[in-house]
Image (cartoon, rainbow, N blue to C red; front, side, top):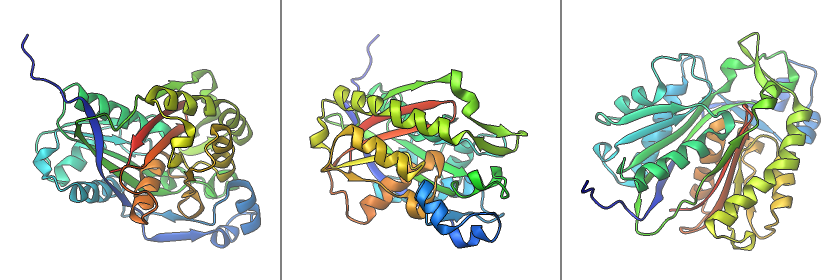
Length: 317
């Protein structure tokens, strides 16, 4: 078999983001449930979050973020040969979000599939995109994390309604002369899948203390393994961008990773927990604010329901 040579590496070409216009503050939630701004900030670190209206779907947000990433990349729609959407909040199992998003973006006949690894979904999808480009299965890949968690929240349950939010983030991945995306380190702890689940098949429920213990005691090792496999020392990091689950979790893992010079993403303060959208959303916003210059070395770490986790090192375009 005489195959054409595959590119030696893959890289992120551009990011894009979308947040709904609706802002819900802690004071707003205090009018619905027994909570307060102090209570919410002290436990999860959130001041406000974005919530989509009834007419804005997961697909709408995926298209908005994906369109911005595509425009920023300078590529034409037909340069994209694969679209992957990471989501766990689509209201319909069929059709998938990715094929519909591709059609609305004018991308002709791409490979298209969704990934459900909950809050680790974007890292899973980015790992697949990296391998697809390097293996010659795709030229350029559009990877989107999009979630409308507000559809799955019991707004009378203060343990969840104060945390979760809506949004989308996206990245275009393409070939590179040198690897710019490190190997993904992923796994799962399915024996603890009952710690985050849908109550009554419609309301997101989590065992907060159990999830907190798992994330803060076990996941720093995953992050350090991703650094080792990428050949990057903690002191070489420009930034650490973990899933924005809870500010206390973010800061606890960051301390164990041991990169005091690295900028730590704290997007959760104003964006809330947006599951698979949180990492690309935070990255896109950090790049947009000029906090991550081109070539910055970033460690990502996603983790969530399943229980699933994934980490990789990447360079910012």
